[in-house]
Amino acid sequence: MIASYNQLPAEVLEDRACEAISRLQACQICPRRCRINRLKDERGFCRIGRLAKVYSYSPHFGEEPPLVGSSGSGTIFFSGCNLACVFCQNYDISQQDSGKETRAGDLAQMMLRLQDHGCHNINFVTPSHVVPQILEALVLARDEGLSVPLIYNSGGYDSVETLQLLEGIIDIYMPDAKYSSDELARKYSAAPEYARHMKAAVKEMHRQVGDLVLDEDGIAVRGLLVRHLVLPHDLAGTTEVVRFLAEEISPNTYLNVMAQYRPVYDAFRYPELDRRVTLAEYRDAVRLAAEAGLVRGLECF
Image (cartoon, rainbow, N blue to C red; front, side, top):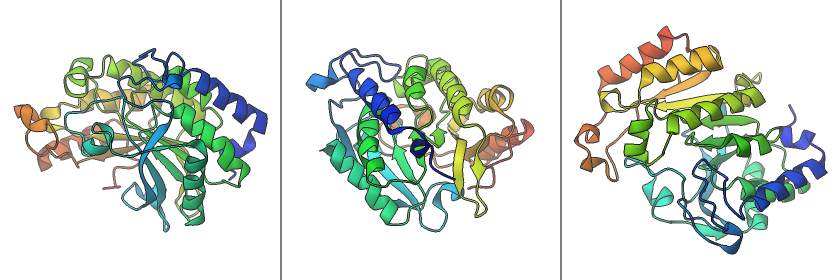
């Protein structure tokens, strides 16, 4: 299957990139709508200005099996984030400004090197605040022969208007569905109206790419894959998350119910978060997903 962006006329991809860059002038790239001028290197909530900042790029074998295959997923970890999760396992990347500012040509070369390494895809990790910079680099990478599918691996706090710029470009959307409660999302991730924005974003993602499609080797080539991290005391609100996915997206949604929660970073400041998830809590979350009919992906981890 030909990657989506290689099916677009070159001028369409270029126009999307130019439009996205122009939106940095009064930034509304994500739901925060900081409206600062990132073209002049002003910094809003995400602390990223005109240039994207990259922490690392490499083949990664810890993602879901349909993304990893035999040669790994080509991950590019972007610094900064439009969330501020108190339990973030990558807090040094997302909230402590690790990483290096990267121009479009250098970002394009990262994509090409990962493809040359044999990676099955290019996996943009935490891309919500740097969509314009990704598109700017993709124009260059496509001209130099990039051809593998692209993964948009986000925290789920995405703007529908920005996602619409990615239609026909992103092959695989992989958002988190972190919370079903806006109140808890604000408390633990400083994310106003997270649930509303996440649900709207997931609907738009599914509209663009549909359910996850695997090739004959079991490698994902297109579609939606959702992650849901189980939190202690059911603080993530699994019941509503799986209901939403099964009833408002698709009962064939590929869902990874994740048990990896650890009380890192600032989680110790919240007694209700200051422990790992129990086996019983994880099994309850998996049961809820299965009862909702969401069985694709439950065997992942």
